[in-house]
Image (cartoon, rainbow, N blue to C red; front, side, top):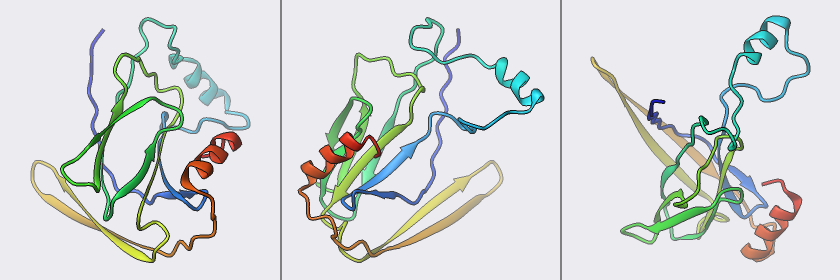
Length: 170
């Protein structure tokens, strides 16, 4: 049994949940989860893949280490389907998230992170910079996002979060 570590960074547009939260989803699989009928060739390939089960002693766990640097004070942060530890950063607009210690997390469900800040219902823009470096060169990419998300849900954040969990549709 060999441990491997895979790290990746990317910039992604955040979805909006309940008109009160930004939602980041880290998918636990890189392929389509559901399809109507795979071809015989695809079915044979898929049949050779190992199943991910927490009961399997050879199953590999995953870990999450996320840092959020928001433009304003972060007012809400939670992962509805995983237990997390949240650590305050050097400023009130920076938080770090890791899986709670003592649990073995299998990549058998998506990791969903919901957060909100003081700015969520105010028109604003975000400019992000990503630097990709390989052996011979560096490439700099920028991503701009303009947000106009009026406050249409007058619920308190905690009530909106409970409603979201009850709907099971974050």
